[in-house]
Amino acid sequence: SFCTLLEEGEGRKMTDVEMRDASEEEEEEEEEEDGEMNEVALQCVLKDDFVNFSVLVGVGLDPSSWVDENGMTLVHWAACNGSPKVLAFMLKRAPHMAGLLNKWGEPPRNLAVRKNFPRIAEMFDQLARGEEVVVPQQRVSRTITIS
Image (tube, rainbow, N blue to C red; front, top):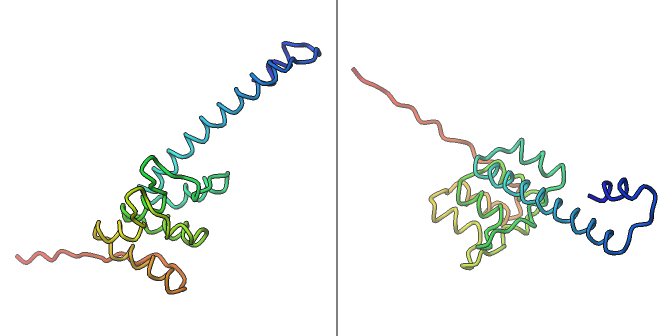
């Protein structure tokens, strides 16, 4: 790393090549850290883990810059996996993400409808109507056993 080169040089001036190599090494380390953060972010979205997702945003994750090879954003993934808490968090901070299209030309709302998540689709409708995006209430299913 850059610090190691400085220590090895013991006060001598680094050459342009050494400085460029140190800079490239730091960039590679940052890209690796970003890749790890992006993977953790996706896992938080898939699990609807709002707490850890908000921590990632607090340390620098920009949800609107995360896009996979199919043009799927984190909002797309939240919509097609039925992750209301993380979705509401993202839509409140970056409402423009609701209109982003994946490589097949689909906005996130269409994925929610196709995957049969009507409450998730309603969150996009709230945004479109200019209303506050709220996390839908879970239905409580009860099984009654008659003996």
